[in-house]
Structures are given as structure tokens and as C-alpha cells.
Amino acid sequence: MPETATPFAAEPYSYAEAHALASELGLSEPVAVTLVRRGYRTPEQARSFLAADESHSPWEFDAMEAVCELVRSTIGAGRRITVHGDFDVDGVCATALTVSVLRELGADCDWFIPNRIEDGYGLSQENVRRLAERGTGLLITVDCGITSVEEVRLARELGMEVVVTDHHQPAAELPNCLILHPQVSFELDRAGGRKFGEGTGRHVGDYMAIVLDGRVQGRPPVIQSRIGRNGQITLTGRGLQEAQDLALTLKAGALPIPLKIVEER
Image 1 (cartoon, helix red, strand yellow):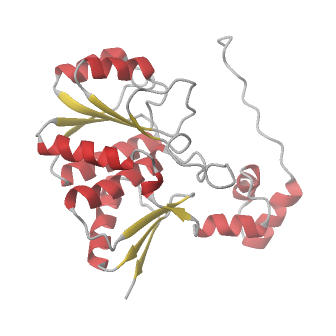
Image 2: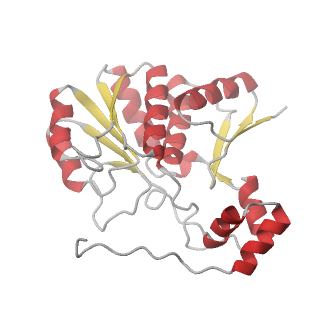
């Protein structure tokens, strides 16, 4: 094992609290234990999390406006967009979702998922050069890229614009590009804490896809989109058909997404 590797150790938890959740909410023991480990230690806290009532606007990402404008201009110029994903579940889902939405918007869009054995995890300088050679103008990472400082620098030197969407632990130095990330891209709330947990790569892709669908296609602004901590999407407003169209786009691109549509009169 490399000297830099840190052994994984699960945080201790109260079995009594887990048992109380399982009994009160009718949950299996593994689910109850997971909820307690994640800080949802009372039936009220767990019930609130599972209900997905807590939500936030995609516009709370600091760079969301700039990302939308960059994608819009890239599509308008006819430049190729490449979505660089990851080989695990949330990476594949985020790739499928993002590619589906971008193609629906008229983008010349392809994708690249590295081979776990041959390429390893995340961006590599070799693959960045390959993407440049095959004509990528805008590189969007999903579920990777937050620590790829040198790879992003190389991509920009080779003429590519770069957007990083990721949820993994950031390092001290961030890539010099637009970033959508639940730890570094949100404004602090009044209490000084982050509004979101770590999320998954697919959840960050959900945010970007929703906003791109609205901004690039000009969806009516009466449709408001919000995503809860557990990934449920809530679309609220007037124009139910627009919400249903977006829901079909999202579901076509990834695994079924918890969705709630609220029609306002």
C-alpha cells in the first residue's frame, strides 16, 4: 500500500438510534444505520431528509451563469463539446444526462469515459491531447476534474475551454477554469456552513442540465427548478407541459430521477 494512503475507518454510531429509526420509519437496519452515520439521528431528521422537502436553486452555483453563456456560445459557433465522464455509476449517469441534454440543444457533442485499467481515474494529459487532436473546443468534466490542475492547464494551452463539474474532495489549488462543485461553488449561508452536502457527480450534472435546458432553449422563466440534498428535483410554476418535457429529457439521460412537479395557478 502506498505510504500516502489513509486507511478507511467508519465513524462509530449509536445502535439504539439506528434501531429507533428503523422502528419508527419502517426502514431496514442498513438504511437506518446509514442515516445515523450521516447525521440524521432522530426520526424527525431522517423523515425530513427522505421527504426531500429541502431544496436550493441551481443559480446558487457561483459560475452557473458563466457556464450557460459559454455553452450557448460554443453551440452557436458550431464547436465540438466533449463530456469527459468517469467509469463508476454516478459518472456514467452524469455523462449520459449531460450528453443527452446538450445534443437536444443542438450541440455537436461527443463523450469520453476513461478505461479504468488503461487510463486510470480522471483527466490525463495523454487523453487531453487526444481530445484536442480530434477537435474538442469545449471540455466539460462530470464526476471528475476538481484536482486536475495541470490537465486543465494543458487543455487551455491546446485551445480548449474547460468546465469542471465534480463533487470529490478539492485540493488546495483549483483548476483555472469555470467550476461547478458543491463545496467550492456555493455561497456560504448565514451560519457559515455550506448549503449542500457532497452530493454525487450525477446531482451536479442535474443542476447544469436543468439550467442549460432553460437558458439555451429559452424555457419560460415561470418554471422554477430546485434540487434537494438527496437528489429529488422539484419543478414549480406555470406551464406543466414544459416541466414534463424537461422531465423526459432528464430521465432519458440517466437513471430514474426523483421528480416532483408543482403546477401553480
